[in-house]
Image (cartoon, rainbow, N blue to C red; front, side):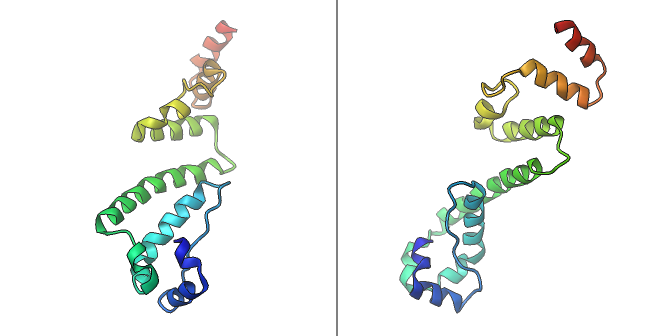
Length: 144
């Protein structure tokens, strides 16, 4: 994609599509998602730019990129849901649990028992209270 950012290649690409390559933004993971999604959208148009034709991933690699994009869409949707104003701790736990179920390698960072969770008992109790489990309040009081 970097080769498409040169003036000549950008002009050649513009003859076939209004889409242009995106630059990576290291402070936002979503820029990776957007770059991969953009590549998949205009891969056929890139083939018309002769100077970068040899740089285009072959069919097998393209299928892997499409599979990656499918997974990245899951992470992107969770990222967007986490940014909503009405998200509760129970919603976050449900989202993270669904991610760790689908992508087991994320358990070390996203599970309820991850090292980043400083007070797992509090988190579990708060989720139960938010979900309307009244017995959780009594159990929390007993522990305190």
